Length: 129
Figure 1 (tube, rainbow, N blue to C red):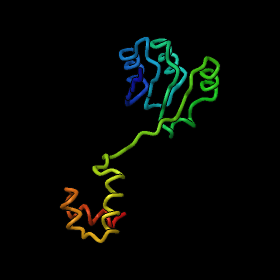
Figure 2 (cartoon, rainbow, N blue to C red):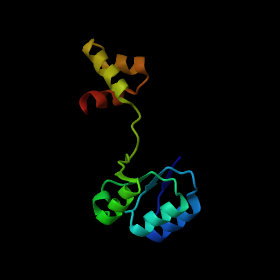
Figure 3 (tube, rainbow, N blue to C red):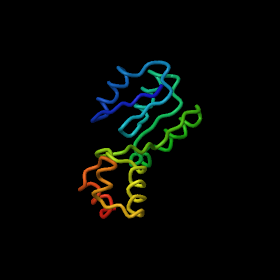
Figure 4 (tube, rainbow, N blue to C red):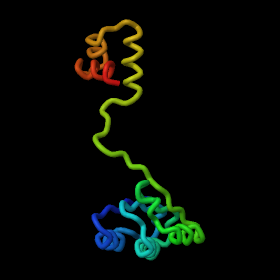
């Protein structure tokens, strides 16, 4: 089981770890730098953890001794890239379909009507890429 714990500061993170982690959890993601105190708290609450994730920007700042200690007991500390911002409404497959229809000679209006996408969005996807 995977658990995400997000907090604004270390004290809040430690409190959430005590409240939310239970035995049986195998993966934990924390949004703050995993210090020795945080790692010990995670292992105390969920001894079955095999992987701890943190943001890629914080991974280089993690103490080498913490990483070595985790490796010795068989636990991975990994940087986890999280997507930010608003999710895309149209996926890559839709983009490929628009491009294919354009190559076939269809007008943006015809593409808009056939795919059910606003005309302005079709223009943006064709010209703004």
